[in-house]
Image 1 (cartoon, rainbow, N blue to C red):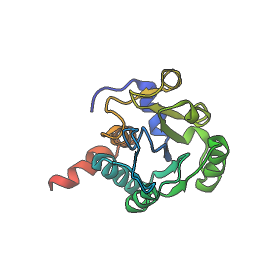
Image 2: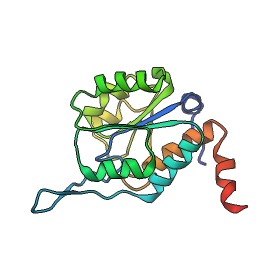
Image 3: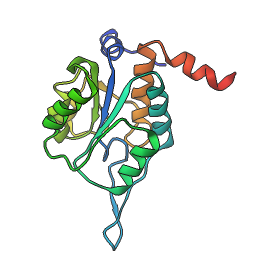
Image 4: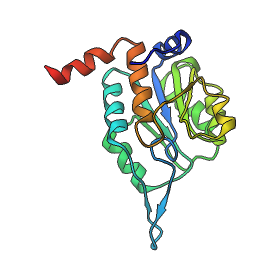
Length: 178
């Protein structure tokens, strides 16, 4: 793992819930629409496996997205994401409801986003993160900016950071070389 600033490690150590936006975070932000209106999205397996590994450490996962694409619901189910809020236009209200459902305090939440619609959650959580392609104003409010791009391992990087800070990453990785 690359060296992380001590304040980022301390924030990540407290995380019990990782919340994500979808478009521009779990995907590269492009939306393909077929002639029949069906949306097609591309997800990276690195992100998916990172979320599964993080979940095995006891950290809950959640998605809050403004869109309602069936492909996202399928991916959420495949990955065993604990909480799924779709078609959300007021992310702050969804965040408050989610925290209540998950039983976590604000400082125990991490959120990764890419645009200004994510800021109502980012400015309230313990570890606000953004992808490098995020809107400039959003980047100003991120405590951590991933090195990996959106839809290409950014979420995995954040999962690894959280597991590293909580002392779980090395053991999780060693399981694969036994």
